[in-house]
Amino acid sequence: MKVFSPHNKQLCLVGGGHSHVTVIRQLAAKPLAGIHVTLVSPDIFTPYSGMLPGLIAGHYSHRDCHIDLQRLCRSAGIQFIRDIVQRINPGPRELYCAQHPPIKYDLLSINIGSQPAIDNILGANTFGHTIKPVNNFLHHWQQWLEFHAKSKQKQHIVVVGGGAAGVEVLLAMHYRLQSTTSINAAFTLICSDNTILPSHNPAVQEFFSRHFLSLNIRIIKNSFVKSIDSQQLHLMNDSSVNYDFTVWAIHAGAQTWPAMSGLKCDDHGFIEVDQFLRSTSHPGIFAAGDTAAFTSRNLPKAGVYAVRQGPVLLNNILAEFKQQPLVPFKPQQRFLSLLTTGGRHAVASRGSIFFQGKWVWYWKNHIDQNFMNRFKP
Ligand SMILES: Cc1cc2nc3c(=O)[nH]c(=O)nc-3n(C[C@H](O)[C@H](O)[C@H](O)COP(=O)(O)OP(=O)(O)OC[C@H]3O[C@@H](n4cnc5c(N)ncnc54)[C@H](O)[C@@H]3O)c2cc1C
Image (cartoon, rainbow, N blue to C red; front, top):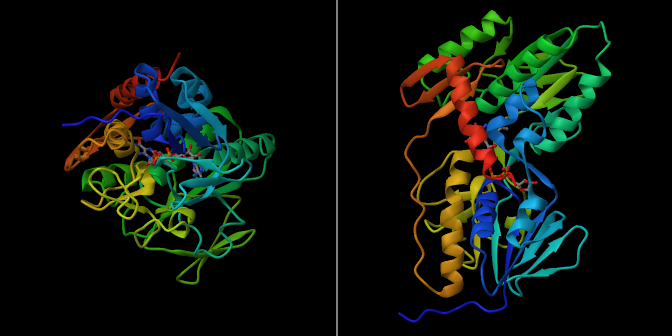
């Protein structure tokens, strides 16, 4: 087989998500000849999602669970552009950022994650805080903590979304207030299903329901929030819930620019990719992580998949440059979730498997620290 060697080619990576950090780390170990690589990211420090509840709870520092993209890029000889991509033009192969001139590319890879889909909830863009972008959320949470540090008035924190992110974030916030502040707060979780953690097994659901009860945390089930104003969340059944701080942790939504740039997207706006992580409409564009709609199989939006797609993504980008065969991404059927309960305690969930304990938290901590250590100098 004839092997082409790339020469003066431009690879552009959009977003410093879990897949791209894996790609960049591999490039640092084995730099590419003949390919100039650029990463565009609005953040210098990108968060590792598995440790976020621990950061909110106060177990970790910001540095513990963020990867320094600028430094990582430097170590791999990659150009880092701090900006946000707003549009691409696949014809002339250009991408357009908020503050930089257009960037030319030969191959493009998009790993921009997702954000809670709040656009259909009246007022949600103005009131409350989405859990993503994570750095915005952490900023608002920190501000709120500082503002209320000396307050004697009882506060009401409401988290909307009964999946793993909503449950873990609520318990982390609860732990933080109880363990290191004198802020007096009541908590409520609103979920649209008849149980919290609907994608987990009954034993996990039961454990967390009891845990919430023991902490006096109210769960409002089977409820959709239809709107929010400066004081209240309004539910579909016409009841209202007062709040002082609201967190949106509902199902994932997509950015609009990929679809508006002409990339084929699914009904929710996520970029349709084939088994090789290539756009189904534009083979010179790859997408991975939450932003990709993997057409071979419906995948949950989880960092686990984003991380595992990294090596396949890099392999296929190189293969595309060299005009060699691509390899398919083969997702595992199930993955182990280690869900934290606020303190240094966690629950393991996989299919029908359930176990819990402090040791599960330390096990998770070990896995997470190992992951982060790969990105340290
Ligand atoms: C609290 C919480 C806990 C979680 N825990 C887990 C867990 O334990 N295990 C698990 O598997 N999943 C977990 N998840 C889900 C996980 O966060 C996501 O599935 C994962 O982050 C997706 O990774 P990604 O690589 O697609 O994108 P992300 O990691 O979200 O990264 C996207 C990056 O793209 C950048 N970006 C965004 N828009 C643009 C743009 N227009 N131009 C340029 N750059 C852009 C962002 O700044 C960001 O750095 C958790 C989520 C939350 C909220």
